[in-house]
Length: 360
Image (cartoon, rainbow, N blue to C red; front, side, top):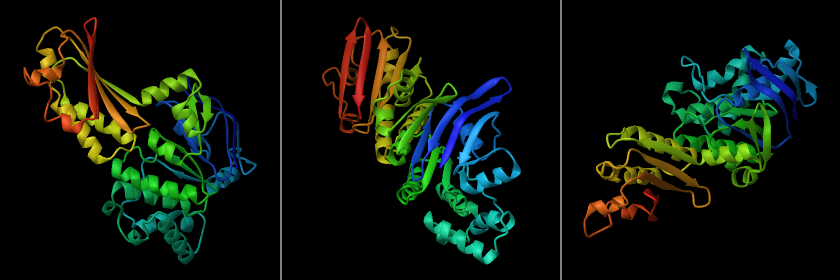
């Protein structure tokens, strides 16, 4: 259905796409992952010439997209594009946003266009919002409207450019549910994402983009659980962990909490679980570590487990060999405020290197 051969793109002197070759078959749901700046968005935008590639061949249903006006129009009819920002016109009602392209680009009779648009809104569960203004919708609903807008022209393939990047947990769930519904209905989908949970839930195949090309590909289980190549493994391991350096007991706790929440959102963890992790972080007596004046830095690492879908909070520091939980009482090493929130904890010390692991 979609073939890309030896695609290359350079911006000024920076090579973004060096030699991308890939294909998407009818009914497939393909996830494109990779580090920021790897060229995922550029690759997707090259497919219908929103970005013009320097070299290479793109074929849609066997038809080469050459860059001519006719071939670009053909590609844009066949490929429905959804960006990570909905970009709805605020002065138009929802259904009018959807009717712009069929009425003014494809010259479809207004009544017929209206019926198409209502059918597309129904697919994403928003038919009752047709007469609403975009400002009256949640960000998740706005993104679903953007998906409906892409479906109006009945494209052969739906391309999503990190559609949940700007959404919180509950709203990501809305977009995930709609994407799952479209995938299960047989829609061919190609999407980029930094959200492992989103990719794992709907993709039938995952492509890891690095060095300007498809570096490794496989099933979601292969890529996320058993990556073969070194760079893929490093990316997946980094993807599952977050490191935060604390150099003083006066550190910015609000910044740390925000990073924690973003990390948990990435994996679709529940709001209740995220609040539990936040409470544990807020109640850790880190000031006791710095009060010994023997440690200059505490390294805090969050590690996500796909198997148990849980977070481990790991603290490491050099200096005092006393477990920070011991500071709550000279006789009681248990903290009544934290213990009910955690599944377990372990403290070790080796050559003044202290490590405290808390499983939430």
